Picture 1 (cartoon, rainbow, N blue to C red):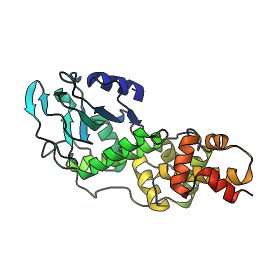
Picture 2 (picture 1 turned 60 degrees about the vertical axis):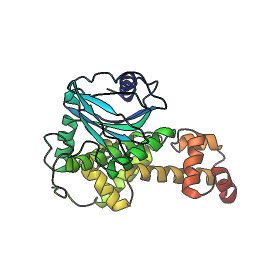
Picture 3 (picture 1 turned 45 degrees about the horizontal axis):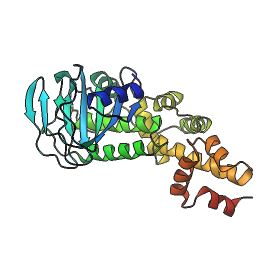
Picture 4 (picture 1 turned 45 degrees about the vertical axis):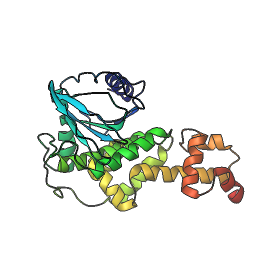
Length: 301
C-alpha cells in the first residue's frame, strides 16, 4: 500500500476530504505510516469500521477536544477528556470505532505486528508480543513531540521526505517497544559508530542522490549495516540524523553554485535537490540567516 492509498482509506474512514500521510520504508514486510486527521467542525456519526488486522494505531491529539466515545469490538467505551501530551493506543484487531461528534486534530501512528517483529530483529532485541498501554490516553511526551514534528513537516512542501519519515519511524519503534511492548530499555546486541569507509560511503551516496530521496534502508545497505544500527551510528559520528545531513549538503551545493555559476535561483534549487524555489528559500534562510538572493550578492565571485 502506498501513501496515496492510505490517505484515501483514512479520509473515507474518518469522513474527511484529505488525510495527509507519510509512509516509512523501514520495514519490508509492512509499512509504518503517519497520518494527520483534522476536522475544524464536528461531523455526524462514527468512523468507519476497521478491518481486523494484527496491527496498532496510536492517536496523539494536537489540539482539544478529542474523540469522546469509542466502541471496541462492538462494546461502548467512553474516552476521558484528553489533555495535550497524551496518547491513545488502539489494537486494530479489535475493530475500534470512534464518535466524530467533536472537532478533532491528531496524528495517527500505524504499525503492524510484522513491522514490530522485523525492526526488533534489526535492533537485536526481542519483539514485543503486542502493545499495551497501562492507561488509555496516558501522558506520553515523546509521542507528542514526534506528532508535532510530523504535523509541521506535513504543512511544508518538501519537508516530509521519505528519509525523514524513515528516521521518525525508527524513533517511533524504539519508543513504543519499550513503553508499550514491555521490552527492557538499553538491551541491544549491536553497538559502535561507523568505520571511516562507511562514513565516506554514506556521504558519497547522499551527495550522489541530493536530487532524489534515498531510503535509510538503501544507505544502510551501502554500509553493510541494519537500518536501526546505521541510523544510530550515523548520528553518533556526524552529530545529526541522515535527513538533516542531506539538507546540509543541499545547502552547501547551492552555495557553491551561487558562487561559481550563472544559474538562476530556480535552476539552482532544482539542481541542489529542493522541491522548488520556495522550498529552497525557506530552508536556506533558516540555515544561513539570509535569503539565497542576499547571500549570493555578498559572496558571488
